Length: 375
Image (cartoon, rainbow, N blue to C red):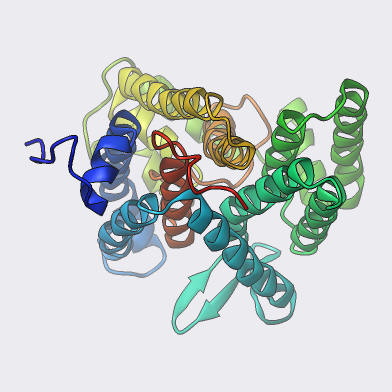
């Protein structure tokens, strides 16, 4: 039922209702509904395999969903000025946690990316991504508006610090996401073409360097290029799941891939979707992600406020790229990489951080969002 807010309603909620992008908001709610269904389907087998109660993981995720929705809606009420402040403060907090992670974090599968705080496991890099998008957007915009401020230099220094902290964990996937956010914002801020080409070459060189510096990266790339070069168990099971699901799937709860894949509820939840709900459901998921990203970019590019344009573009880039990496890994289109599927995969840090990020994106792309957005 549509709320009875007239267009002349000047209350906070009234203004929010008539300025928010309700189509994007609806698409995000549908993605969360997909996530709830797939977590209930995929996580029981994983819970039992690690010695927990059958629906333990599902309950943890579903309990967090109302909080995530409340955060997304609450943050979307902010004006651009408050989004800027929120993003900068959030980035400072995330950087502190990233600095502490190698020293006090918990090692899982050879990587130190999580910190235990009061019984909760927090991945600081998840919160750093949306805040980084807002903070760099502000730096680039400030540099354009006040020539005495070295906006490009400040943004480059922040990016270099983020990359260094992420590679210490090590986390190449998050490094790629952060670098892509930075590259998109830098390009929109007026990066000359010769520097675009230079950065692209540097990015390829960086991936080549990671191949020689990090054994797990080399192993994944080798197994992707040569089936006989490494362990392909997870990706083989994933591809079998898509084949078994066919057009309409085996039905919710009827799949088998979740019983044999350790990360069926997280990195390979898209395979569970393919097996149990079928190709049509997978295409619907792809369409939802594409809709959110393209509509978000369309609204951002109509903004006259440079800070709003850059920050919103960075936030939607993160959202779309993260979905692309997860789904491409499950389909063996790229080397496997642990990356959550936004609002669908299991992961408390990811769910909360993405809700905050999309709340900021919704706030920035509200009609006339540029008003009040000057630094």
